[in-house]
Image (cartoon, rainbow, N blue to C red; front, side, top):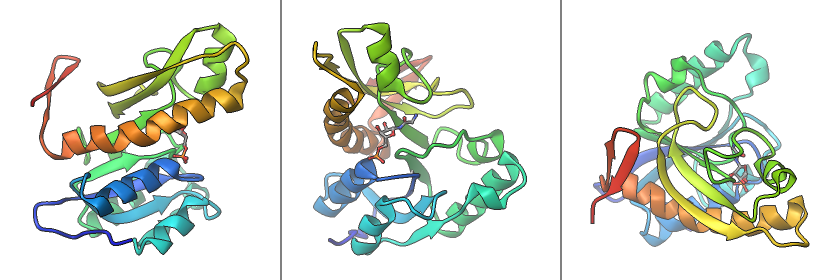
Length: 209
Ligand code: GAR
């Protein structure tokens, strides 16, 4: 798979911590031309993140930057920024990156960090969102693509997609149904941002046609 480096594409990095299906969906979309991104770097805070193998095989530069090598969150975030700047990155897509980012990161990349979360925010932020949804007893859940701010999954919403919660669901079955939607929604929503189709008005985003 080639990461097409056409002029006009927006240089981005994707940050992961694990299996990386959302990262893979973004890589595939960039390769097929439906995501206007030049993916410069896939960075993981975990050396054993399975997604790194996929990115390597796709010919994308990968980097492991372990948070354990840094004394504070701020130190880690400053190192992240240095690596992303060195790679010429303008936008950052979080794809299962299980770290809370501080002002040291979000200052330099203000308004240019996007995340996907496996729930319909503002319900069920944080970890184990699918279990939170099941425990609460909701009948509909889904996923949210949002800009990242300094809160936990509190940033401005870009796009959402719902899925039903079925009577027989457990955490695995609901997570799989949501993940299938995540893998479709993330490339589309990120592409809208990178193509300048999203305007922010107060807390609302409006998609220009
Ligand atoms: C996805 O479900 C993503 O929404 C979630 O982690 C999973 C990563 O899967 N992220 C969060 O919960 C962030 N709060 P992936 O590694 O296969 O993309």
